[in-house]
Length: 421
Image (cartoon, rainbow, N blue to C red; front, side, top):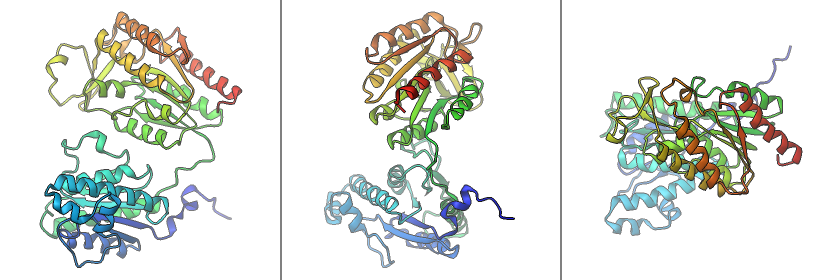
């Protein structure tokens, strides 16, 4: 009896995978060579990129520092003459990112691993951002998981491991860390499944079942219509992944129904997906069905002291990691204007659905975020600021009611009938 073929079996996992190794070969030759040897000992291939500037190395590399500098728009001599390490490494980061992206496109590499302290990590973060979602990307860093790394610098699927005890040469602790990282990136490259699908993909933004529960009805309904559905948890990194895929045209359409990440970015929360939130689908003409789920809340780390301006706000303590603070009427108006500004700039179809009776579980009567007058002010501002070319459906329900899902599906069904999708 023939065993059914799985997606994993159909992938090129059995073939050798090639990993791009990025680092300063003038100062970290031993550590980078250890990474190379470990990957090769497990049957993988390596491609070595030197991003050093001042020093030299006798170790063989595949992409020299001169090639990296040239790809960044300068020469090594120019960068050395700057006398400013940060500016020089910015050019090297630009060149390394361009070259790495080209290597992925041409199929020459299947993953990336970089090694560094703060300077090397800074460059590695840019390289990781340049690679598509789904390409394994690992950073061995002395500042892994540190709060000095802002969320917008993190690629949605980047992996980091702390480079402990390895700042000056190899030792038992350093080798253990590097070996784990080498095995992880090679294993990921061998196991990765292409993002391609026979079904058109719809991206949906949401929060957990407590706050926003529409996904329980929406996802199966979309699948019944022949779509593959990816749901993104709108807690910062989820939105970054969503925007990354939208920017690359991976979605047939989006149901962008949770706006809390936009509020977080606008009002200074670290739980942010960056300044591109609610922009990329519109820039690339992807049809958007949009609703303001959780647009009345700003997330803040539960373990972090609140700024003075937030201390008197009603708050929902979700868990030990994150709490949600309610926005004032004026803040909601500001958010509504920003939403409208971004939606008005869209180059593709946009339809906004407004659930008049509430936009998340904690704004129901008796809950901490219940403020119907403030919600009405938000809706009034949004409707006023939206262009006349952006149609709006007024739903006489709460966002977690089945009728809200029905309203969004009516828009999709009309688009299908009209050949928009």
